[in-house]
Image 1 (cartoon, rainbow, N blue to C red):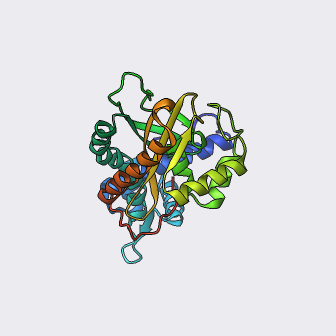
Image 2 (cartoon, rainbow, N blue to C red):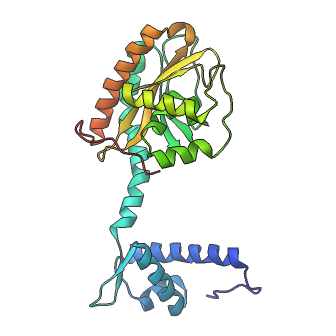
Length: 272
């Protein structure tokens, strides 16, 4: 198999080509479990010198290791750890859904589940309430995290450096009439979320809608998702918001325990 194009690729194309070859190499090594340079060269069609160079880079990155006695290579558990992040996202939705369905039936309001992607929250589950008029959320919808009760939960327990980077990374844009439009105000709100244990969206994302959210923790204590309840502002006076917030904390604790979280664990920032 030829390894070079007719016209020499530029620097960016070369980097992309190297990444593509490394992925092919890792896929073959994962299938073989243990292999040497010659075997991997035959399996991938790459020259032995190229395979050796890529393996050295993968070893340096900690995703491949070489047995000093046999000189054979094998994947490390780093790949397993990376894969678990994606598995956990699927697991969170599967575990949380029946509890959200029960909660929505209990309080007769819309229940949601969200994950953080950069500075946004993505809704991955929506359970409608029992009222004709209710907030509607499209699964897969993305909104700025600072304007959402779910997003505030996902930001609140990040490290200070990561949170500041996300909040300063792009302009703050108004969504509803009460959107917080300064980093200082958002930081104050997130401190309140950490102290109270749940977040409140007081018409910050959309006019006429209020919502509450609570964080979900994994076995390591990291905040990996958030659940919420939303309703028209007329059905969410302050007293009911406080009641729903406490109920959300209880349900979030139950879901988190199914994800392996122990109440004694110290909350940490998510790694995504």
